Amino acid sequence: MGAADLYTPALLEHVQHPDYNFALDDATHVHEGVNPSCGDDLTVHARVGEDGRIAEVSWTGEGCAVSKGSADMMADLMVGLTPAEAKELCNTFGELVRGELAPDEAEEELDEAACLASIAHMPARVKCAELAWRTLDEMLDGASSPSTTEDGSERPR
Image 1 (spheres, helix red, strand yellow):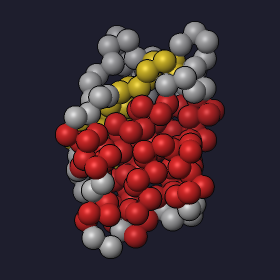
Image 2 (cartoon, rainbow, N blue to C red):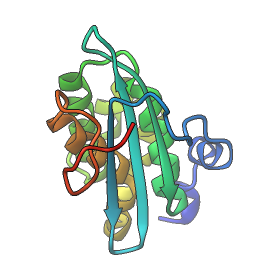
Image 3 (cartoon, helix red, strand yellow):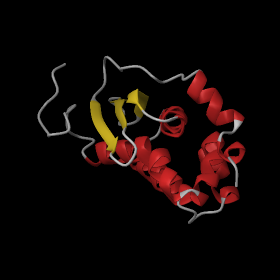
Image 4 (spheres, helix red, strand yellow):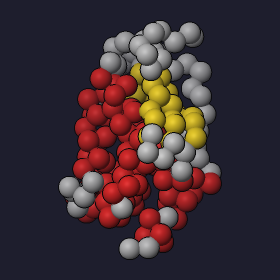
């Protein structure tokens, strides 16, 4: 498997022209995720509306093309979902990139993020692809709590 299988046009488009790479000023939840094996450091911002659905997701930080492109794809898919639905989608993505789920089984749910299925053949890069998804999943574990920093203290608004 070559780099061309991983660096698809969809991934490269999200890396070169990210739609969701900004700090969300009115975020109700903020959580940092770090991949110490390669240095990726992303912060995921989300706003959960009064209806209990995710109204917006964004991300900031530094990382490789895989982590940034994956974060941008993830942010696009989360709008309109409940936290429980978003956590389930994060789980589906994790199964896909770990090779536990066939791409055709996840394509409808994951849309263009399914292009990252080939990363299952590169175990060292799986953590890069999963970083934003794991970070959102962890953040949603406390979806009823206010924006917090990684150490659990309340983030200034």
